[in-house]
Length: 206
Image (tube, rainbow, N blue to C red):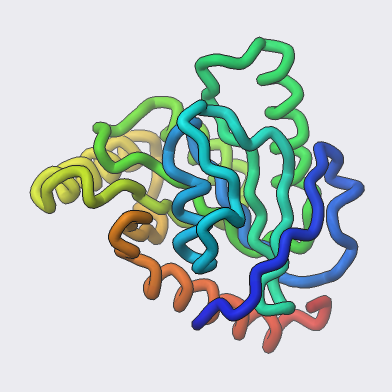
């Protein structure tokens, strides 16, 4: 799939105010400083569609972008902020949970994980929440250009081991990406395209 148009539609902290269009949505979420904005800009061929910042926690709202006029890319606030107040963190968590548990248009979430680090408890816990809540998701490992192929394989293996230890029957579908080198771009967009085709074919709501 090639992205020809990417249009910012709305930012808000109230799921009830999200677009009413019944189009498939793909939500992107991850810990602060995981490279989410850079990945979104790489996927959409826009340098400034999503705001990048050296300061973690820049995304503080639910951001909807209309892609090719037939699906939404949703940029969500991260989890595990180090530098926001407990009150702010609580507000983020509330509307993120609200979005995942009530948004009927959501067909898949992409949980972003920095491949440079070994398996982090906070990521495992968040994915466990997604699994227990039966929210379909894939893992997107980011910043693959920063470490060797051997380390990438080692860190993915560590995630598999931890997830199996947490009663996962299998590792969720995953992608290895680099926003700098456009690694994984075609695979990720092809996956979205395939899911979209299935959704439009088999779901009368869309």
